[in-house]
Length: 338
Ligand code: GLY
Image (tube, rainbow, N blue to C red; front, side, top):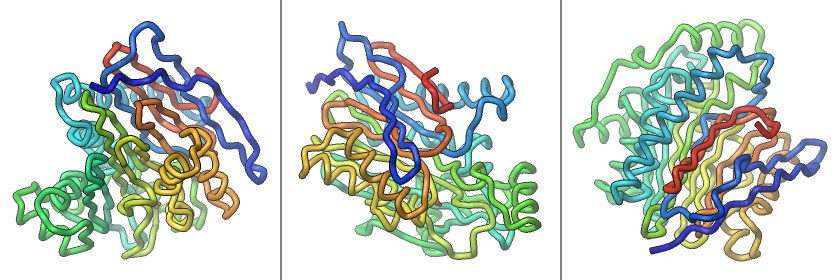
């Protein structure tokens, strides 16, 4: 059984073309006991300032992060696989309208929801994804079905919804995903053409390592408010937002998708770990530095081959959390150490 090495504790702030890239696993792991399994999640990155979040909102986000961590941890505790764990964790966030994924997803300029999701199993680098689905209730389940029940890696649009329905997944009217908050956000963006980070960076994701040392990653999103019909971001793209390779690393990303696609963020991070011998923090900072160079922002959660982990982002905050078999649990939102 793989024993997981202690995580990295140092908060590093480096300059990347005028933008800060922040790596901050912000609660030390227990030294005495090394965990057998671990899960790390994110619920989106952006300008998330303490003064803009009421105590009630902060408590709601932290509670939702804990629900997601608990769901993934339950799988791992029972000896389940990391791929089942990341799926279970993000499923709770797809069903929670606080996040831009599943119920509560943002609206396109045509007042619809087009949802993207992907999942990857580090054991054999099997992967599945869907882009632009409008009816499958939980896009992450559709991505998993593509991986497990088809010979393909990616389905898009109506074909993806039809595939999901054909394997028995629940489908809903597109309006199921709509909330008042996202209606208002769409109105504001269409009126002013101004996007706030909250409109852009609500993607959710998870990475995990199980008792057998297997890595997995999952990412799911509604994309960006007022996006054009048919626009696809990074979230369903293996190598951009999602990657997992046993013994190397697992990554889930959130941010301005166009930049993450152009850098190939998730694969870049894993390749730097594997080929350049970078630490997971250094690899993530390099990839996000490239994103910043191109003008983009966002963040990643990364888990190394031994279960070490990092949250790295060049935005003002990222909803995030970690739980492991020692009983350690942390949630964090803002950029400063909490
Ligand atoms: N990262 C989500 C998107 O750009 O669609």
